Amino acid sequence: MTEFDPEKFEEKYVYYFEELEAAYSAAYQQLHGRYDSTVLKAIDRQLLSESEPFYEGNGEFRVELPENPRERVGPAADHEQFDVVLETLVERIEAELRNQFEFDETE
Image 1: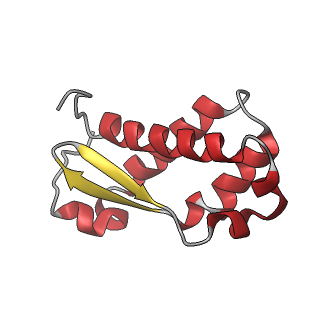
Image 2: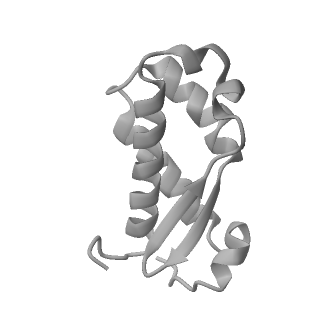
Image 3: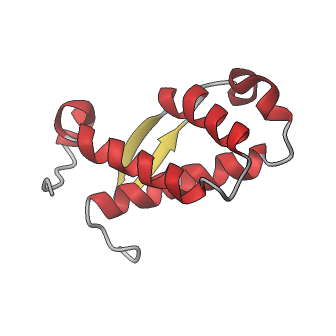
């Protein structure tokens, strides 16, 4: 486990690439099988690949999605599960980032 340094997180892809990859992967795996795979894959490939995680301080992370998420995923955006899958996946990524960097949920 790499010790977390908020200043280094500004260059996250240099210092924390493995942790970021692990957090995104763990979040995806938690939702795999629970939601429509077409929607989950579209969000993963078209939105999350372009998303940007930020450290907010106090052990909190935020995942910023690219503009126009519905347009980016095409027909998957019309699926009834789109909004809940997107929201849940972003929440899981943020939680997994806290986990990767060993922040308690209560911090």
